[in-house]
Image (tube, rainbow, N blue to C red):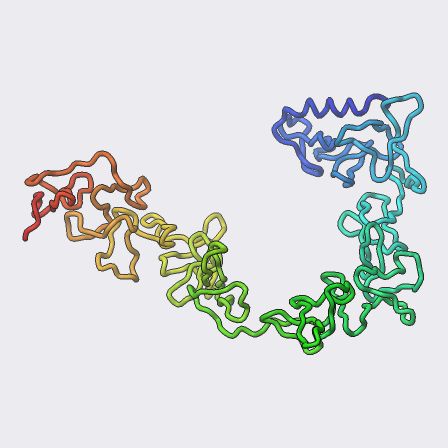
Length: 468
């Protein structure tokens, strides 16, 4: 098909832009569905009820995952910012006499695949895409396909776009090939006898896999101005420790050297702090009880730090951190402490849409208070006037009192009224009736009351001054 291919795809995208949802590659589709269509921005079409590329294109993960033109098919010479492009390493070559369209062609040394559609390409540099059909990472260059791009094989290190010999890899003294040369800025050198890369300082060095560098062992000399000497192992520094001014690698505070000097080990804890005790995040020997899910928490850098429960957990009277409100929990017998709801906060493990989280014992009569981090009774619920700590209490804005009978209920005080959800009491600015001396009253009525500010009380059903 010869014509302005770019313009055709722009028109397709414009027509489809009014739809509400675009479908991705491989997603089921329907040709008759005008609201959910295959994404035209990546040049998909509905083929046999699945979003796929049309017969002239193939799914390509180069740069941006989208459909790209196969080799030997017509392509736009000047594609839009998002394409469509030629598949893989192919390029859109000029068609004689056509200023707009070209043909997808393989560039030497690449050649078309015998089965057509793509170029056979040998990737020779780090970072080249390798998941397209026909692309192979060069074993000679010590490359291997990692994810979507070529990376270095195990034992070789990335240096720009090439792979160089890493620790214990084969090398050749004087070779100009990167794969046979030790990467110098990692402090490696090629041993002429063994033909392997080793650290420049021999036994005073240790290879660190994480930093990909030779580091100076504990007790070995070091100099800040000498790049071959000053990089000490992790958790240590180059320090002056001798009268002659010599510097050696020394473990940091709270660490000690391993017997072989190859690493610094954390000193054993001297004191385990309890919940609420003051702590220092830099002190590694007086620590919070991590086994009980406690962390050294500092509200702000300038404030004192304390041992607190990890996020979502709530301390109990035994100093254990149990699951708090809406925290994950387990309904199985004998779960871990951090999966046990804090019963002292009157919570239990409840199932909600297949997930188990901590909630109030009785959601119909109780509500959670984020300030106290406990569940409390709703206004109007029967309560225990003795304030027994083992029994759930009223919200801090209400009190437990009689309301005309023998039973006691959570009730709002003067000038307050229940919130819409009955969880607490809010100050009432309107709809209040202040009774005068001698008027009939009900002590529990928060809407009509004897004002305490006038030194009146409701006594025997009448507003009066208190007896002296």
